[in-house]
Length: 184
Image (cartoon, rainbow, N blue to C red):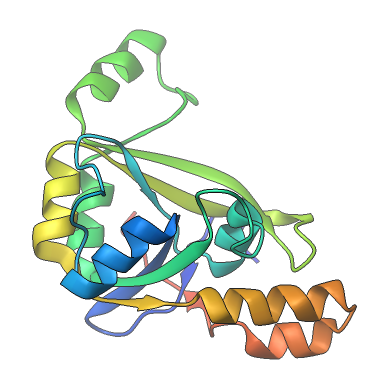
């Protein structure tokens, strides 16, 4: 298994990413079919292709201000644009000044965090997180979103199965994520 690989629900046209919000933001987005106030376009918004990473982040949709988890299907073209216009959140092997310059001029941040298992344990491979700001948020909200689905009931069902120690049931309910082809 590759250490750095995006695993996601996707088809030839779209990729599904996840976000967790308080009910007011989730309800408004679901009604509008995209993000509208009280969602704030001027803030960075993080999208996560990994359902389990979103479950880790939101505590199976139980943490304050993350009580609702949305599955957001976006265009693959939009996701490709985000990656092409991104800068890693840390310099990695880039010289510090080059990284800082790139950081200032790109509207997208990427970071690879340890993927999480059903019990939130860190796994050996990494999961991609994508932070959108400025122009990227506008494109996301106005152009890339194909549809939004409330997956909070699924998060609660899986979380309850995990809490009961029924990992087989929890695993069977997970969205079917597959490796997503990334450009070099």
